[in-house]
Each structure stands twice: as C-alpha cells, then as structure tokens.
View 1: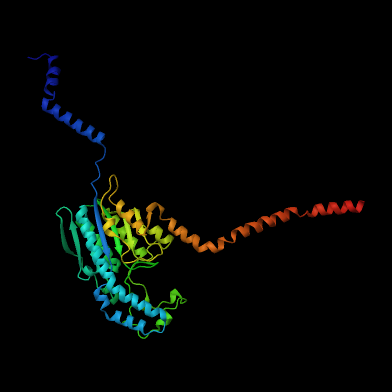
View 2: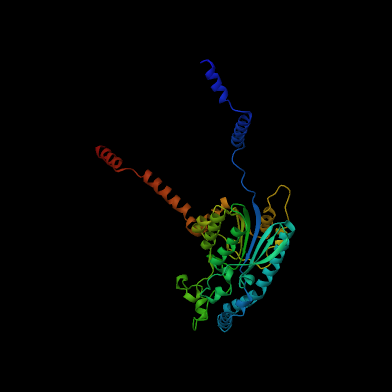
Amino acid sequence: MRTPDAIPAARARSVRPGPAVVVLGLLFLLWISGGIWAGPAAPPARTPVIVFYAAETTAQAAASENYAIVLRALRTSPNPIASSIAESIARDAKEYPAAVKRDSAIVLEAARRLGIDLLLFTNALGVERHYVLYRASNRQAETRNLPELPQPASVVLAASPLSRPDYFRAALNEIGTLYPPNTVDALLVTVSHGNGDMAMMPRVFADLTSAGPIDVSAELDGDAAQDARPDWAAYQGTSKLEYWRVLSEIGAAFGVEFPVVFRAACESGLSGWTEYLAVPASVGVLAHTARQGLKYDQIHYAEAFAGYGPGRQWTDAFVTQLTRDGIQVDPGRMLWLGPLRETIERIYPGLLFVPLLVWLVWFGRLRLRARPSRGTLMRRGAGEATE
C-alpha cells in the first residue's frame, strides 16, 4: 500500500515524456528556429527570353486590291510627291519582308548559340496563325498556333495581323502559358512601321477599297488639318498608348519583366507626357529612334546578340550595339527627359524673349525707383515758395 507521499511521485513518473517525444520536440524547435534564421524563401530563378515580334509588310498586302488602288492613285497624281511615295511603297513591299526574314534567322541562330529561349512572331507566320518557339533546354524550334481572333473589318489589318493590339496581346500572352509566373525576363523587340502616335502600323494604312474617287494631291497637302482626315485614311494598328497597356497587362498577369524594350520603327520615341505616364514599371530600358527614321539594314542583330561579357548582364551587349547603330537608349528612370526635351523645344521661341522681358521689368523698376515721389515734389515746391 502506497503512502500519501508516494502518490504524487508516482503521478509525476507516469506523465514524464519518453525519449521519442523529447526528440520530436527538439526537431520541431530546430525547424522553427531554422525558418526564422533563414528568412523568407528565395524567389524563383528568372528565365531570360527573347521575344522578336515583326509586323512586316506581307505578300498578301502587296498583292491586295487595296495596294493596287493606292499605287494607281499615287502614280497618276500630278503631285510630284505622290510618285516618290508610290516608289517607296513598292520598294517596301520587297525589301521589308526580306529584311525581317534575314533578321529572324539571325535572331534564331543567336538564341541557339546563347542558349536562350526565343518566341518568334512575324506577319508572314501570323497570317497563318503561327509562331516559332525555340527551347534552349532541348535545342528544338517548333511551330505553334496562335489563338484564333475575330477577323478585323479592315482589309488593311487582315493582311497585317501583328499590327493589331489584340494580336500583340495574344502573342505576349503565350509567355504565361509557357512559363511559371514571376520567372521571365523578356527582351522585347517589336519591328514595324510607326509614327509619332502609332507604335505598330502597316506601311499602307489607308483603305481605298470603299473610299470612292479621291483627290490625292489634296490628301498630300501638308497644310491640311489633322482632324479633317477622312475615315478611310485613319491610322490603323497599335497606338503607343495601347502598346504600353498590353505590356502592363502581361506584367500584371504573369509577373513578366522587360529589362529591354526596343521599338524598331520610325519615330518610336515617347510621344509626350501622356505616354510617359503609361510606361509600366516592369520596363527597364527603352530603345527607340526618337523622331527619326529607321533603315531596313540599320540594326546589326548578329553583333547585338554576340554573347555575354565577363560580369555583364545578358542584355548589355544588345544595348551597346543598338547605341552603335544610332538607336537612342533610355533607362526607365530617365524616360522623362524625352517629353521634357520636346516641351522645351516647343516653347523655345518664347524662351528667346525671356531675357528681354526680364530686362524690361528690371529697367522699369529702376525708373520707378529713381522717379521722385509726390510728397518729395510737394516739399520741394514748398521750399522754393518760401525762398
């Protein structure tokens, strides 16, 4: 029979944890402390990807009824400018597709050599709803399908699908289907015709198939008001604001970063403060032609994708070569300089009169200060009267 003093001791022995429980407790404490000391989990490794997106002139566009009407109207116009435009359009139909075919092959070979994935889009592939994907992991290039999108009402955009903003969005959306979220750094090259307002547009953007008789000389008149442009002559394609809207959507949806964006088009710089505010934070560097033109053979892609340098980012060689080729390269944090420069240039004639205005104000104040006051004159008059 146990004594009363022995009962608490027996109970203490009965609840003492065994060796297994002690070991599990220690492991749990180590796991907790390890998690605290290690901090948050490291972000997933990012994958470099080249996206080459070319909205070149297609054979379908050059052979279309619209092209025939446009060229005929230009060549029969008495305006001397019209004939030079016609020759430029005809030359573009031959040289631009050839240049894009050449550059596409160069970029594909560079992706193989560098071991970088490539998404290759061209209008020639786009009219068949195709694009090319090169995977560095298996060193294979495969032709894949783009989603089927509604047919445009315009015959112009039907022959240049990659000029459309919805095709641009569908193409970049492929990144989200191919890679995990928040893992892609995309070097984006968009090749197209463009102007001050449009990021991507066909060379012949006017639809004359239903325009009826037109006065080409009147349409070529540089003094014509921009807001008087008829519907058939409206710009068609992807505006600069739509361009950035697509990149913003892709970045938000899939966590894609764009360390370099090269808009290989004429007048591809920022159009002003409104466009500057539309550039997403995911863009590291914007390469552009400012307000200049761009030749078909101006960019040396073989040298641009020459390879990595010791201690350099994988995009450094590309950006360096673009600078050598006469392309303006602006870091994202410095993009505001472009609109500021344009604003200063726009008001520059007025600035010439600022020194004159300052001098007039200074001279006027000086004269007012030197002129005697009314009280002084009265006192002076009273003194003279006393004398």
